[in-house]
Image (cartoon, rainbow, N blue to C red):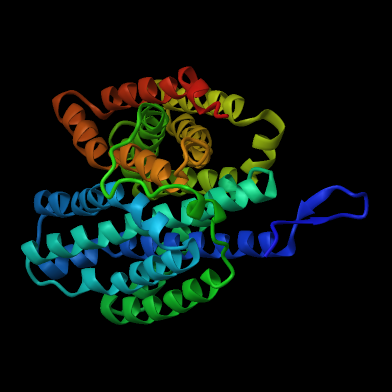
Length: 391
């Protein structure tokens, strides 16, 4: 298999297999996102089924993030040992199959155990598909990571819609998850057949079985951490902010979440053109400024319309940062998968700390004060964008 072909002008062009792999990787990202969205939209049903209140549900929802962080340090070695196509295939099928598990427990302890395992599988699949995305981007010689993450965001919206329709129709989570897991696993496995292996892995020594991130990876990961913190704030707290701080209706609160999610998805799908024009560093710098303006707008919003506009700007601002963080990680060191895993581990730590930090500040003061912190963190993205300027 060759990575390039010669065009009529004598210029090397990517081979058809590379474009095929790009499309297949987009499908895998969409499948991963659909599982995520389907599960997230059914959390109220799961909480009722297990019989847990908000406090214990919050603890249970920490488990996926902990599981992912525990798995990440080992994933670089696994990606070196196994070619990417089968590694992606196994992990994405396992992630789809795992969708059934949260609907089974009847106790809090078992729910926590299930979500811990599910998070570990999700983290491995996330690392594997991002490593494939970085490889495809390298072979194409153009930015594609933003679009791939756009397909993930689109998958989240589709999965949430499927769960909403199933719930409205009176279909239980168990049969929905069972059918959905089978369909998505088949799609993910079929798409993985067209992925590409990284030939450079056989030319380098295997990384350690357990590896902590290096300093360059840590710096890139911290930029990702700030972006994920902003993303978590917009996803998890925008509805409550509109409702409590700006006096919006329940419909307006729900619209805030939709506005944030849709602007993120659209920005990511269109983002590769922006990245090709401006370059990664300038794009991240402008993204940080946009996110900071959005967060400040939310804090200073005199009314509902301005607040909704602020959340939309925040969504646009954080949308492209995580894809570019992964792409930058893939250019660090001789083991791209290890660097991607390290960045993911640092960035996704926001998933653990953001709910507690935002909730704690809100309880001690107000959600407005919490979003002052969000504004400060996303402003750091603009200041630290230079660390993404890889070789």
